[in-house]
Image (cartoon, rainbow, N blue to C red; front, side, top):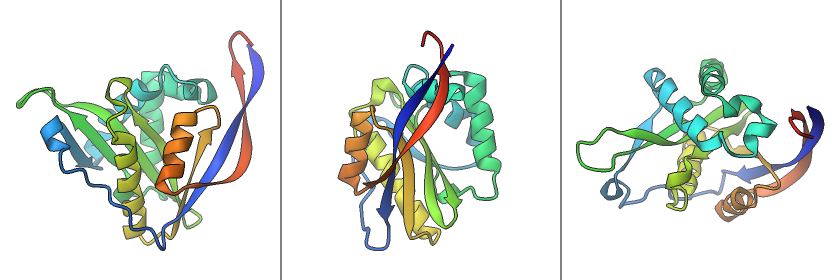
Length: 188
């Protein structure tokens, strides 16, 4: 084990003039469904989070994301906080055929931290990336923060995750500062 530092951006977006649209009319036709937060969905959020992050660099930065039990503990911790914003927390399920078993394929959670909407763990499972789900999750979360009365939102992203950085910039986020996360990583 060795210590390494991950460079991350804090990215911010002003919601006061934001009027983004999050809806995708063909989502249901493609087998996807939106699910608003409910306490009974914590395990599904955790499953989507685990499938989304287990093989990604974020599992090195935050080791709990690389374990099923870690994702469940994290999801329980996030949803039990007084700062939790259910309106900004969404799950996407997918059915490969009508009447098929729904599987969780996308998740995002939100917190109110010092009157900022704070995005926690936007994740889309690898098999469903490239379908606009990450963008739609972020847009729906932004709408949830705005409906909860928050005027600004922020997130952190590892700078090497260039696909995510570009997505956030296209949505309207701007890099506010660089932060470093120290982590112990095997083989370093």
